Length: 109
Image (cartoon, rainbow, N blue to C red; front, side, top):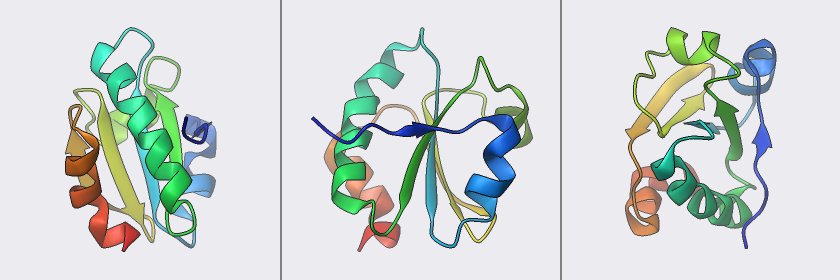
């Protein structure tokens, strides 16, 4: 089982994500979202392997509507990577581990 990912809220987003000194992956998800539940254990595994290079967080879009709206998150799961306060990568939809590793290789290698 992978590492449990910490949650981030609208009020913490600027400080925790945009002001981070290393890349931050944010998994936008919701309780009722089946594909979100599929991708969650994969992200937890990746967090275990790569948390030295990238911070892994999750945001519940039902509880935190402001940030997803600001970043035009319209479908979930959406996995965004932020570097130096900017959106560097956006992955929409559930993907298998190999595909996620490939998409995130710029941040994990």
